[in-house]
Amino acid sequence: MVDLPVLYLRSVVDGFDAEALLGVVRDTRFEQRLLGPGHFRACLQRVVFPHFSLDSGAYSLPIFASGSFGKGVVSLALALSCKEPMWANGRLVEAGQVMVFAEDSELNVRPGAGSWRWAVLLIERERLQQAAEERLGRALAIPLSGWYCSDTPLRAASALCRTVRTVLEDASHWGPAATEERIAAQGSLLLSAFLDAVGGDRSSPGLPVRGQWMVNRRDETIRKAECFLKAQLDRPFDSQSLATMLGIGERRVERLFHEAYGLSPSRWHHIARLNAARLALMQAERGGRVTEIASRLGFAHLSRFSSEYRQIFGEYPRDTLRA
Image (tube, rainbow, N blue to C red):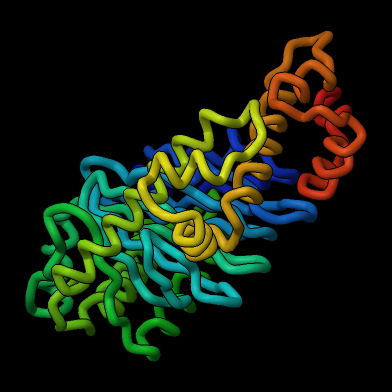
């Protein structure tokens, strides 16, 4: 029997629920919004080893997630599978590439169309570097702030994805009779695979200074636009007001939104309103009315709102309210 603080958790979110998805990565809060129509389903897994943890999620539809990782840990993240490269903090990242985040770093991510699966390993910097010295014979060039995407060799990327799946599958069968040796072996296997994927990249991490500056500026512009539009959820989209606030042309705003979200700013605004409506319906007290919530968020035509809501979330607003 195992006395170590090891834990395996599995949960399923059937139907999009932003509140249920807030803490999908340990000790974090990631705001998530559904971006496309269809029935959403997420299978979430967490394995907590004695000195680090692994979170993984399989999503049936693309979402946009925004948040920050924990203050006391370095985060190693990757897409286990996705049909197209995902957009992460202003860059396109292929499946299997490892993203290395310093403590308290921000992540804004959007996968391509279709289902996708992600994984995040959280570990203290000192323990990661100790493991790197033992495995690679050298420390990793982890930034003190921000993040970089390692140039992971294809073979190492494939091996890492296979290992993550294997460890998650094995952990799901541990049960109370799991031995210390078995758990330690799986933890060592997992950490070694991440180190091999990151350690194979000996180039200087990150983009050139000007390239990084441009990415940071683009990301800052997107965040400003998002904050502005969130404050305008109860009124019609105004392209000119958005461009004026950002100090750039409307066409430039269109390009930025298509890069970040795969959507036009007007479509982003509309889907954000629908997501806000879903959250309000789920939090409504007994006796709440769909009409009141729809009107509060600027939906003037109830039948059109109900139809568009069902297209995105797979159910009518009244069904969400009753549930």
